[in-house]
Image (spheres, rainbow, N blue to C red):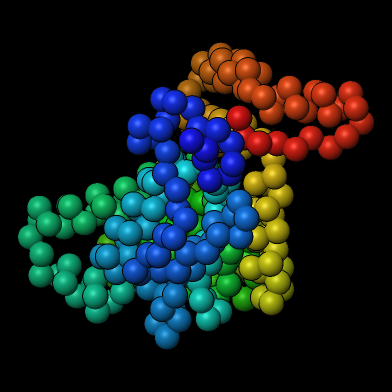
Length: 287
């Protein structure tokens, strides 16, 4: 049996530990595969692509599944119609939340947090392609991504205090300070103000700033470049970036020694060596 990439599937993986997204058709967002890049499009442009209970859950389930998918090596998330995501739908989420009991509210907030956990845990690097409004849960999805490409007109707002809530939503008080620093994160989480594209680039929230008409192309091209690299090595890098938040320096160095020794056992490491000797470009296959 072969994987969707054409490589033989190990016998111990054929018992249910691999998944294919061939034919995957989600109900609450759009999905497209461009080679080894998966493209998620939040597609309610008439409302600036808000999330619902169902889209939260379906996104969480997709990112969980991606941990078992061999054919997709990088992910791009975008919104349709010139905006990224306006957060939770006021009518379909905010309104119903005001009528829920405490156990139901906690089940909801844990589910939204599980989406962030799934984005951080999936082995594929995730790039958010941000234009226009990027607010609330949309800002959280961008924050949880590994990389962010934006435009000057993009407006990122962690606006939870604007609706009477705390800024500590879906891991924001843990992840955001690590991206832009404690003081800047405090500014955004207390005020709920919008962060423009140029300021977001200067602060390090955005990795790249491009023109609106180029934001998706630039994001997909970057994802394709990443996908062409050693996917096992990329997955290990992502895992170490996440796990080392809670480590001391000595523990981190030891963890990286073990991780790198594991990567040295891969065929991609050997391919890179032989390609270098032959003065050729290595063709990584992810094993």
